[in-house]
Structures are given as C-alpha cells and as structure tokens.
Image (cartoon, rainbow, N blue to C red; front, top):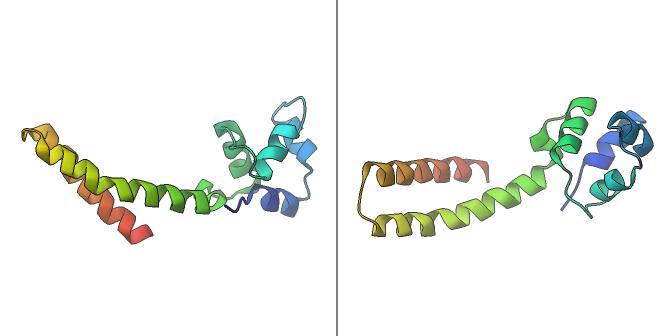
Length: 110
C-alpha cells in the first residue's frame, strides 16, 4: 500500500522532527514508522497531516480506503443472507435496507 504521508511532508519542506515537535512527541520514530508503512498512524497523526498539509484524509489514505471498501463490500451479501434467516422485524428490514444502500454506494466508489 502506498502511503502519502511522507510525500506531503516532504513537499512542505518540514522535517519529520518538525512534525514531531508540533505534536509534542519526544522523538520522531513513531512518525517515521507511519511514513514507511510499518505502523498505522493514530488519529492525532492523521489529523495533523490533514491540517498541516491541507489534504483530505481520503487522499492521504486512498489505497487503504479502497482496500477497506472492497473488504466491506465482500461481506455485505453474506451479512444480508444471515439477516434474512432471522425473523423479519422492522429493525431487520432497516438493517437490510441500509446494507443494500451501502452496497450501491460502495459499488459507485470502487
């Protein structure tokens, strides 16, 4: 998976140590591992890169988002099948409707 954190930071001319200092981190190794895809960044890191470099979170993690959408899409139909085996209630119908609309939305994105 491609990680754009490093690319956006480098474009800004900020060092990894600069970003670490902005986040009040004692060392930059955590950020370095995130930029090398060795570690998933925490929300604070994601939001910091989003704010500093004026780039959407979706753009920063577009490959990860596509991967996750595909995983969710793959599991929607089996979940709907399981729900249909249960006695039909208003809640079950609502869940199935939600999953079907989610499936349509994901199909448009991938």
